[in-house]
Image (cartoon, rainbow, N blue to C red):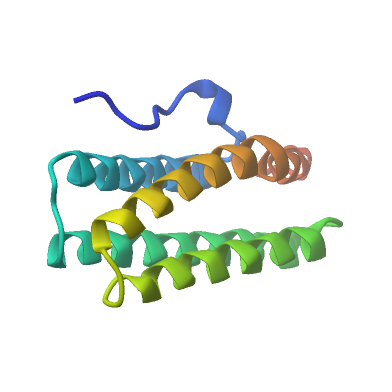
Length: 137
C-alpha cells in the first residue's frame, strides 16, 4: 500500500531532533491512512488517535522549550499556531466516540496531511534556520 505522506529531504529543517520527531509524525499519519484503507474502526483507530495527539503535543512542547531557551523572536506566533493545531486535534479526538470513527479518521487524515506539510515547510523551516545560526543542528 502506498504511503499517504513520504519523508523527503524537503521536510528537513536542519535540526536532527525535530526532523526525527517529524518523521515519527509522518509514520503515525501513514498508520492512520493504512488503517482507514483496511477498514479499521474502534479501538485500533482510537489507539492511533491517542498516539498522534500525544506525539504532537510532546513535539510542540520540545520545540517550545528551545524557543524559550534560545529566545526565538517568532516564538509567540509559532506557539499560537501550535495551540490552534492542538485544539483541532483534540476536537477530532473528542469526536471519536460520538460519531462515525471512520469518517472522523478520514477528516483527521486530510487535516493532518495539509497542516503538517504547511507547518513544517513554512514555520518550522524558520525556527530551524534560527537554531542552526545559534549552533543547534
